[in-house]
Image (cartoon, rainbow, N blue to C red):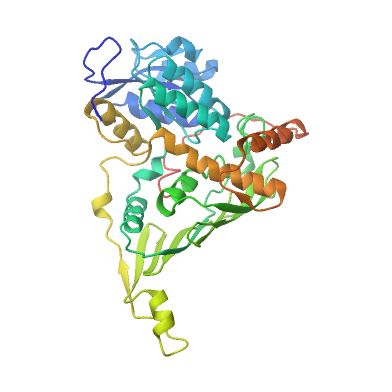
Length: 402
């Protein structure tokens, strides 16, 4: 990837970042950029529609950081080279499109959007713009998942059979759901645990194991909280090679579990509690199955504590993605989370919802128009009345172990 120059063709020695949306997540982005934690990057501007958040910016950010109440006023290539968009989900595509059309590089917070039709439009604009478009898939910086992907792609597990991910350590209280008027509503957020907490896991699921061809899902809405969207989900997936997958998640269990199992013809990989274990078979299971003379004994195996140190990055999580994006602009480094790949997890997400709404198995990808129609029905028929007590919590340390 060639080094990207500014619109006036001047050399870019530092990337000037802007942040649109200084809520919970946007505040974190603004802080680490303002503190100089990203090499080759500076915070140039922030924007928020709420006066209290703009006041926070005035009190806590460097005096030279420009503060705006309308993001369109910030779309000046002479002011910023790149923008991080950290606003409610529905606004990710339209704001990113405006940023790209202004000739500015952009990173969108997850998810890429709520429905695939708007995501596809964003991807087309990004490709036409010639600007960098990335997604804040910070879990792609996690060395264990990077190693898992490498092992799968290199064939160390053999022919894939099954992937089971139990990720129930997303515990949230009612106070969390009451913290924003848009949160956990069909009209404001477009979903619950699947669309808010799990885009990272859905991205990693397909990034490591591949895209499913069919989805059967059960989404229970408001099972553990006073909300109208899903907070407990079980998914069954089918793959082209005959493999299957199970994905279980909730925000209503404590303590929760985060366990990823990937089974193949040559063994099983398990990631849990920051540990990574590979049970390696001496011979392929399929070969053993039809050649063994005994009825109950499996092939010899070796349990290996996987060394993933070679996949550790200097910066982790959100800082790692922002550093990578900065390096891509300054030095041509390959993006870890290209924006166009965000549609894969969203296709799984849309399929999960549609399967649950229709009560049947659906193909992946689903009909985008049908999904949009059903989503609009959820919005229009909603009678939910929400209690709101807005807060702005410190999110540092809430995402590092996923």
